[in-house]
Amino acid sequence: MIAYKNFLGLTEYDEDEKGFYGHVTNLVRDGITYFGETEDEATRDFERAVDDYLDWSKEDGFKPRLKKKSN
Image (cartoon, rainbow, N blue to C red; front, side, top):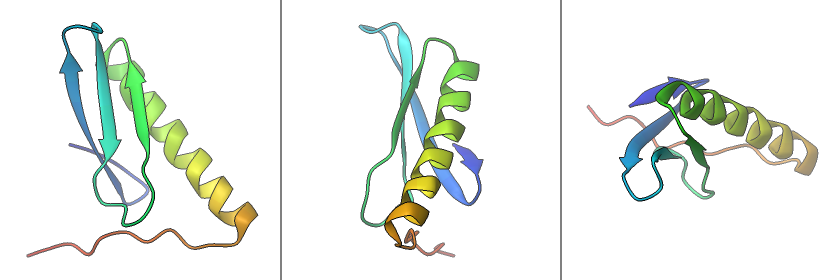
């Protein structure tokens, strides 16, 4: 599990694609996915994808809804 700006990403290795795929796990409505040939590339793509999503939310005037943390 990786974290960036309150977004959580789950990354898994795909043997067929020889790369790391992931998705944001705590976003209520929309989906964010990312990829990298290495774990570091996937992490950088995760951060870029979150930043792009936040930019889009500002442009379109909506607030991202994140799932509440469970205790």
